[in-house]
Every structure is written in C-alpha cells, then in structure tokens.
Amino acid sequence: MRKLENSELDRKSIEDFKMSDKTSLILVLDDIRSLHNIGSVFRTADAFLIEKIYLCGITATPPNKEIHKTALGATETVSWEHRESVLDVITELKQENVLTLAIEQVESATFLQDFKVEENQKYALVFGNEVFGVSQDAVQLCDGCIEIPQLGTKHSLNISVSAGIVVWDLFQKLKWPN
Image (cartoon, rainbow, N blue to C red; front, side, top):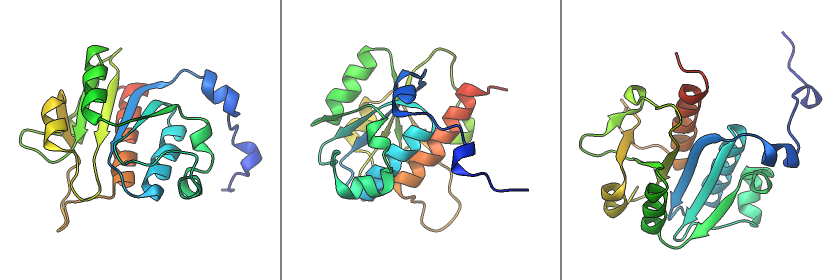
C-alpha cells in the first residue's frame, strides 16, 4: 500500500467547486466562539460539497487569520453568509421547505443512526455555542433534533467534531442510500 501524493488526489479548483452540484445540506453555526471550530467546519463543508454555511450571532466571519489556519482555503470555496439572528435564518429556511434540525440533546431527539433522509429533501443542521449548545428558542423553532449517541462520562463533543460526524452520516445516507 502506498500513500497517495497530493497531485494524485484529483482536487477540484475553486471554480470547479463552485460549479459542482452540492450536497443538500446547509450548516447553521450559532454563537460559535472558537475561530478554530469555525475554520474546521468550513473545511468539513468543503470536503463534502456542502451548499452553504450561515454564521450567526457572535460567530466570526472570514477573512480571519485564525479561521484560515484550520479552514485551509475552504472559506474561498464554500458559500457563506453572516446573519445576526439564528431564529430568522431557521424561519427563512423553513419557508423555503428546508427541513431544519438542531444537533442537540433534547427530549424525543432522533439518534443519528436512526435518522432517515428523504430523497429530494434539503436539510439545515443547526449547531450551537460551545458551552450552551443550541438555544432553547432555536430548538423549539426547528423541525426536529438529532442527537449523537455518546456512552462516556462527558456526553459532550467539540462542535467541529459534532459537525464532522453528522455531516458525514447524512452525506453518506444522501449519496449512497442502501
């Protein structure tokens, strides 16, 4: 087995990325404090051709040196927009028939492994603050909630890790349904 060189990876150019058919996922980041978390989510969004990222509230926006450290250029490929109110974004997405899902531990949440995607449905995944999670108001406004099952003592994952897990799971369910 031989490790592939970067030149063998058939990477898209920025223009090719922008013209590619996108995965039917939108990411909504609300009040994310860590610039490294923001950059990591951009990089994940680039990897899976995510349609758009909404950066809400205090979430920092590109261009930013600290975001760039982890995004590695993904802020140039992934479409993004800053909005003050996560509630306004969720409301607008719902009006566009996008199914909005908070990634949070709540009563009656659907565990990630049990979540079924629907063909031709667009999804928005709402991720909240590193300390407080998705706000109760946002949870109530969303169409549903997905919980990542956790068996350890913390029952808490870094937001960029959570985004990677959930995006990968929904990406593979959308692209390669069984």
